[in-house]
Image 1 (tube, helix red, strand yellow):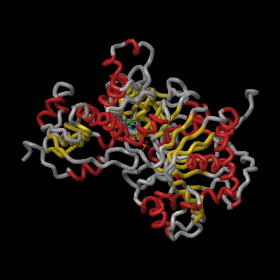
Image 2 (cartoon, protein in one colour):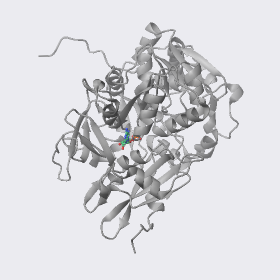
Image 3 (tube, helix red, strand yellow):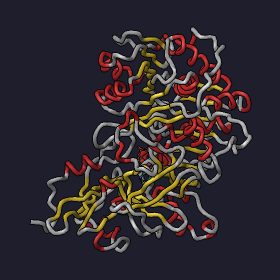
Image 4 (spheres, helix red, strand yellow):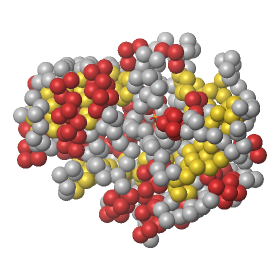
Length: 543
Ligand code: AMP
């Protein structure tokens, strides 16, 4: 017997309609690429999204067509998402930090029909436009006065494009399982793979993430997503904020510590989210300038492990609560969030920190398990490492065009490629990406844990640990360090700092100082590159 409740499809454009009606005066503040700070309400965004939908419809874009965006976080970018999805087309966010050849490859693989782009990326578009035969319209997210002069056919300014539409347009009736968004994973090995979100998965993720023990935001918050919309849906914030009526502050192209601090201050931002490298920049700026963060209450850190020292600095020096989060593009992207369980709040702070450093516990709708090499499930004892598998309604069940099928098993589990532990309370700790794991004498060493400790040394800005060949142990850890500007430290000082805090056999065999460490397009340390650079590194004592 079926229930007698309504089949109200979970469609993302219902979010902007809700916001227009019930949070009409809340909205989006954008640091525009043209320069000025511009304010828009959700009511205006809903109207302009309909114009985008109508104009795309008039341009012949059909349900299921992919429409690419190569853009920063701005109100216009948000309007394109709601407009594209409102006609049943699929917004395809492309990471502009990729090489132009990769961008062209991805746009062709996705068979994008239209490309919305920010003027910052005009040189990229000029370079690749001829290689994108399927793109019939290039739309610069600006007005006619700022239209870049590039030799690209069918180039139009966004404001002109939507000026042709009157906004009298009804959203399409769609199946909630219809494709809605497309985002390619960074693909450190092999070609990037497309994750195809549905309306249902995007709405569910927002509902899942919205709770107090999720992102912990309400309609009274002002949220600054530094995390780009091209990095896995801006972690759901572009849907969650209008859903609950929180204001959004969009930073545009300026993501440096000074610019972010300025927005946090002038817009009285209460919650923000980004990868650790962004916070490294902000904390360095705060330290140098002596500024405080009087309005900010909460920061979500994910994408890479948040070091203990970073969490502690935010919380104790600036009074900002840190929520450490883990997820993946394939998970819409949130999986776990590090909020405290009952009883932990009364514990002394150092004990709480032990939990905050972990990657958190699963949201409802995220199943986690650890498996060994034989595929059998491992203990949830907080000690046993295994490959982390996940399952849930906002998690991919395959990649676009059937690629990477081996990551999905018959029981619907997706292999994250992460190695982790799970404790009895459900807190998960990532040890490494499986391909970054260091195997010494047959035992695993966690690079993340050593990196975490290394950056707690006052002179260290950033650290990476990689496995280097060793004749006896197969691999031994090498610690690569970037020092803070003007700071000094020796190899032995760094090793002394680690000594006693990790098992003796985890101690790096050597420390190398470098000026900078390269990051991927989504802000992760490029371990593959480091391993290549140090492939012939000879550890002390090795002949
Ligand atoms: P992406 O799809 O670009 O978001 O990358 C997902 C991967 O980033 C995960 O599989 C993890 O390896 C890594 N990751 C994300 N969040 C964290 C975190 N809090 N700590 C450690 N690694 C993380």
